[in-house]
Amino acid sequence: MRNIKSKFFVVMFAMVCIGLFLTTGCRTKPINNVSNVAFFDAPAKVSLQKTTNKILAVGKRRQIAMKVVKPGEIEAVLISKNRISKATVTIKYDTERFSIFYKNSVELMYDPVQQTINHNYNNWIRRLEANLTNIYVD
Image 1 (cartoon, rainbow, N blue to C red):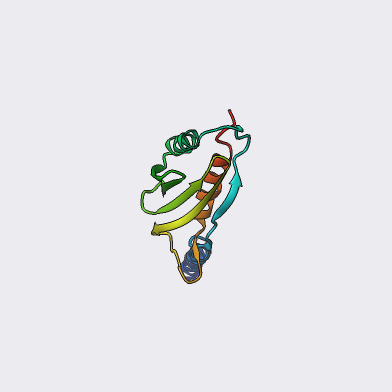
Image 2: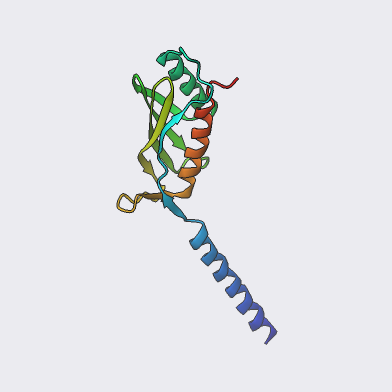
């Protein structure tokens, strides 16, 4: 009888763990695009090239692959630590402000109808936004 009870509790514990994983491990959230955020402490007469270089330096420091598409626009590829999922974003900017827009992703449960994505994407964007906001702070 005792053996049956212990097996029952093991099975129930496993089911609860699986349920928790399914409800919390795969959360999706609305996509967080960032629009017209001002650079903190940007110099009055800074060139677009210097701003580009500062943004690229953030990418290098955070190990985010970035390439200049055209003046005022950079494409950045954010790759997860496990190298399975990735997201590509477009960063549009001038000498005073920037925006970050979702472009595409792999293995992040993107839903184009609901405009939702794995919650980790928004965490990446929040950190990138914070880093870009402070590119002129020494």
